[in-house]
Image 1 (cartoon, rainbow, N blue to C red):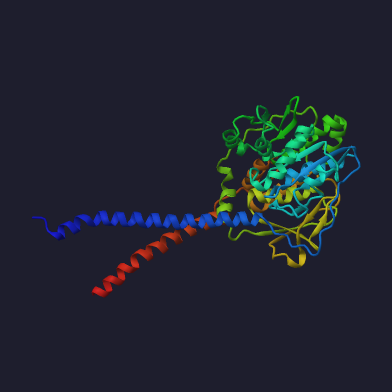
Image 2 (cartoon, one colour):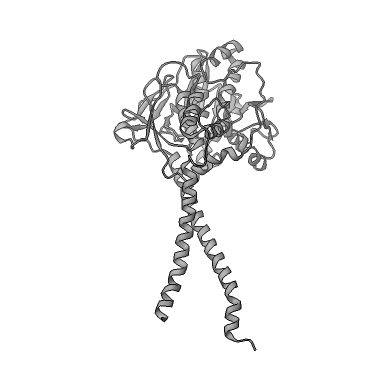
Amino acid sequence: MTTRNDIRIRRTPLVRAARHAATGLVAFAAFAGVVVVGVQRSSAQLHQTPRPAGAHPTATAYGSGTLKVAVVLGASGTTGTDAMGPYEVFAISPHFTVYTVAATHGVAAVEGGPGIVPAYTFSEVESGQAPTPDVVVVPALEHPDAASEKPLRDFVRSNAERGARILSVCNGASVLAETGVLDGLPATAHWSRLGALQGQYPSVRWTAGRRYVDATTSRFNITSTAGITSGIPGALHVMADLAGADEALRVSKLVAAHGWAPESSTQIPAHKFGLGDLPALLNVVMPWGRPTAGIVLADGVNETDVAAAFEVYTVSQSARAVAVADDGWVTTRHGMVLAATATADAPPVDRRIVLPTRGPSTHAFDTALQRVATTSGTTAAASAAKMVEYPDPATGKPWTWSASRAPALVLATLLAAVAAVTVAVKAPRRLSRRRRA
């Protein structure tokens, strides 16, 4: 005859197993919650809220060339290098006049960097109060299909239909795809997004492994580029078409074009995620304890120097980068107005980086990548170079688990979650036993 005690003994291993499984699941859920909070914190730190002192300087068009270039800025957040790189390329040439344009005159947010004050609004360009563009540069936006970006999409489409040369940079191609102007045409974008874009916009002939792709028809004249730094050679390619190869080659020697020439091959490596990207991922999910880098800006700084300093930190997540200037307002060498945090309001920083206000920006990304390699290791720098699609020149110490802050935080968080859940589960049982005793 089976007694109740026998049943209890038989069930004990199952009960214990179930209890351990439940403890593990709850601990994992707690750990996952910490990860979610970490990702949200990392995202929030990318969206800086500049606190300049007083009203911002008036932004205007730069240059006196006959060819007009409009660099559009989004309402949901713009990738800095996508806008600043081509802006500097065209601003250097006397053949072009370049300006920034957005839906409103307010400061346009830039992911991970200082905001940009647009020179004009879309309505001012459309009404003739501002120059009609011959070239429209479309950078990547945080939410290209958002309702808030409809004025930008309408502006891009109307100018494309009017015959303006369109240059999309990185995932700015998704803006064009959303408007329908890329239907049936070849295009490229950042390597990490091509698969998703193929599913979202199947009518576009997405192409991998190309620095830039031309799509010229009787209706549209479009050039799309690969990720981030590809906007610089893409802009030079457009310049060569409009102002001549000699002028584009001259300008290429003054910007971070990494040996570009009109006859250069457009073939580039077809990247994919790998173990080398683990440091950046860990930094995203565990941002606590990351150093803060104060990027000090002053009037006369080159646009690409600014873009590179913030972009490399953004993609590597190895430090939180904060734009700092005396009163918060900065006018770059070629007239772009930036909004930073005033020095008096800046948070404490672990390292202070002063960007130069003299000389060309030929080594902007080399310098920024070397900075990451020195502080966070060559693995982190190589991953950042891949994300911005720039050849990796960095040398420094290799990334190791023991030298990294993020893996230690992951392990500590996981152990703390298990310990906390175990205590929470066992405490009531122990209290119940004491009461029965």
